[in-house]
Length: 222
Ligand SMILES: NC(=O)c1ccc[n+]([C@@H]2O[C@H](COP(=O)([O-])OP(=O)(O)OC[C@H]3O[C@@H](n4cnc5c(N)ncnc54)[C@H](OP(=O)(O)O)[C@@H]3O)[C@@H](O)[C@H]2O)c1
Image (cartoon, rainbow, N blue to C red; front, side, top):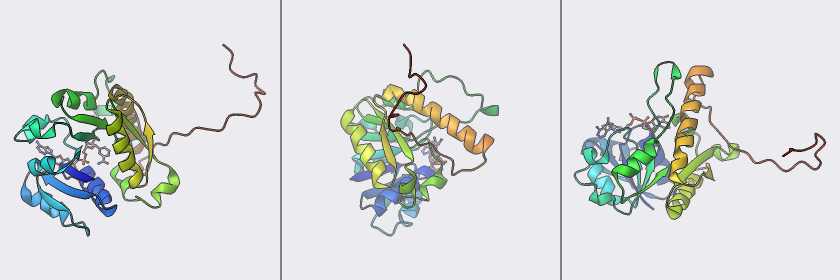
């Protein structure tokens, strides 16, 4: 796939470099051409780097890492985003004492309202950068979930495949409004990483167990 990275910081460079390793064509965008090119130079495979405008033009799939900033402020024109898949990996800023307000509108839904012609997909917000350093192996052995939400089912499938390509286990979470729940998980996991366990390798996996062969506890009652 042709992937454009908007904002080549921790998340942008990590995901972009992993996708490049898997043979995807990646263009790293930055606020300056030099920044984008410097990250592209880290890749052994042929990647490109330049401005965010160039990255947005290049990719069929875009990774948007610029938290809380309307794409209209980042790009010369948002028309370029029409029809493209935009992955939103953002999490809310951590408030004092992890006292998060309830999520009534997710960052992903807000982004979708700012670029209504694009296909916004929530993903990759429930693990720290350190986890990406383990990808794709040995990460694959640990079945780390990437929770994926989007209103466009095809866009959701595309991003699930991109997650699987780099060793994650993709979990279909349905519509974009479910990103409120997934961003809540992002808040929780950062509380665990920073507030409780102080271990950046902490992440989330969802499991589905085999059904019990007998209900010796009486089973669930109506
Ligand atoms: N780091 C993690 O472990 C992690 C894990 C999961 C999710 N996330 C979420 O992912 C998002 C990105 O995190 P990150 O760690 O990658 O942050 P980061 O390293 O600070 O990267 C953010 C990027 O946004 C760009 N940017 C900031 N303000 C901008 C503006 N006004 N115009 C254009 N570009 C701008 C920065 O450009 P410059 O480089 O030019 O400053 C940088 O490339 C956040 O929402 C975070 O919560 C992070």
